Length: 54
Image 1 (cartoon, rainbow, N blue to C red):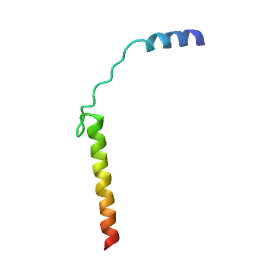
Image 2 (image 1 turned 90 degrees about the horizontal axis):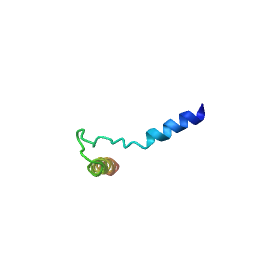
Image 3 (image 1 turned 60 degrees about the horizontal axis):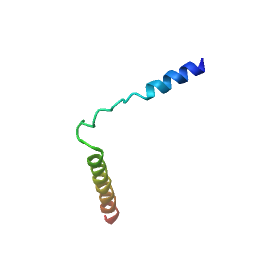
Image 4 (image 1 turned 60 degrees about the vertical axis):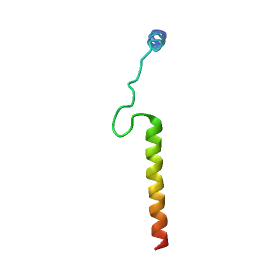
């Protein structure tokens, strides 16, 4: 039974299943998403430093 399951699982893995490109707002690709995350982290760090100075 496991042989049949593994056989068909291996057979199915040979087919190229493409993923759709990242098109959802606000980011169109992973580099743009990473840039947005880093900007948010930078703003958070800046906010903490401003609070510490007060």
